[in-house]
Image: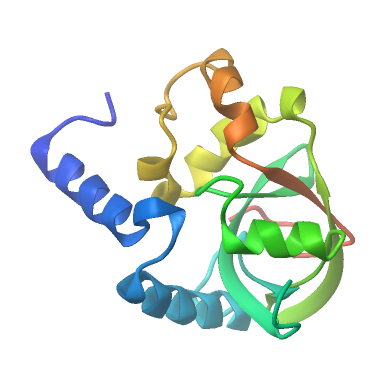
Length: 170
């Protein structure tokens, strides 16, 4: 089972500490800035590792977040590992789904929220490709898709429309 062993539990504990209360602490904010810049540059980052840029719902400023996209049937999805309270989710909803994705170049995209009954297979795929999200999702990635159904409402999923990242799924 993936979630066993004292060292893995320690690592997961640290990752949960970074986002206690579904908010990044100062260390996590610093790491997010680093990964956002790295993902946005496209250098030394997988195709699915992108910088998501959204307009702040209160400030009106552009805000950038590192996001790992999941892919199913040639469609990209952005998943919130912290749930509906994540800042980027609230900003995307306030912006009506308008956002920009950067990975070496930029694409203006629309993020369409996926209905809850369709989220389970996307959440499972997300855990396969986003190891950093695993401590935040209470279902192990080795579980069948059906195990993700009870938690699907807790983790917003957005279909990325208008995105043209490279075809390879690395």
